Length: 408
Image 1 (cartoon, rainbow, N blue to C red):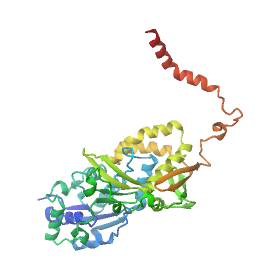
Image 2 (image 1 turned 135 degrees about the vertical axis):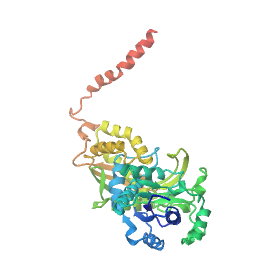
Image 3 (image 1 turned 120 degrees about the vertical axis):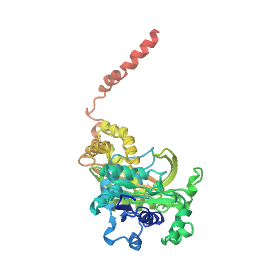
Image 4 (image 1 turned 30 degrees about the horizontal axis):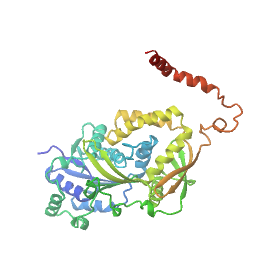
């Protein structure tokens, strides 16, 4: 007999989590609270409420939360202040959503008096690590139920049979085979894994992509976009002030139209395997390019280089589920400190899959001094004779080593 009385389930209303809901009721005999997060995935979430009610979930135990602004403001934007890229390519669209879901799971558990949380991540993936590290960091005494590590329903056919046996509504798309891909979507990205993509040599089918047109079918005319930054975050597009979620949604729309942000990647998962996934991150791709451009004129050289040195460590922390760790918080404090003067405007040109920076300026914080950088007469602003001593001093150790070699 389980000692768990109540659990909060991260619930999408889809086949997997609907089966999990019923399985929790039957296996643990516990009261279930459902939590459905709106992170901008673009799906109607109200059906999740109706499905939960059908399973006997009390109305007060059904949580459907609009977290779009919090997601972009408190998770996506802080990550992009660091110019974060995992393994040189991946913009961490799935990874960065998990700490927010974990946070809200723990908050709802406290609100409802639940002693456990549950999720639908498999035992092969990264998400189980991200959800659970986050949950334990925020409540070290919470119990966690991970059905995929406990049950024997390890295939789609077994899930379907369980659903039929227990009267769980199965959408027609599942009966007809459903999407050939495992998909995750939020305001930052949409990901595709599985089926056809499990052959890393096979090109992704064009019909798979949902947010972006193929670059060859993008408009023949380039589109210009002015992006305004305040303390490292986007605050306006083309002169119009926007909230974080509004800005990212607009960038997604513009980037998708121009075929920007597609990625086909084989990544190294936390659990040790290599996994092939395809991603669409149009808004994030534009944001990363523009943010680096505004930093190029507002950040000190050594501060910028230090950030670049630390970024891979920061990216690994997020990818591996350590958002709530003390080391990530400490590094975030440093990153945020560097962003105080990252203010100004960047102009980009969007054209057939490309984001091209064509201008940047900062009226208050630019370190670019045209009187020194000019190729024309600088009127003594820069004494070129100074470079001789600087070069000789930097060459001193190499000169000593070269003279030693000559004497041998």
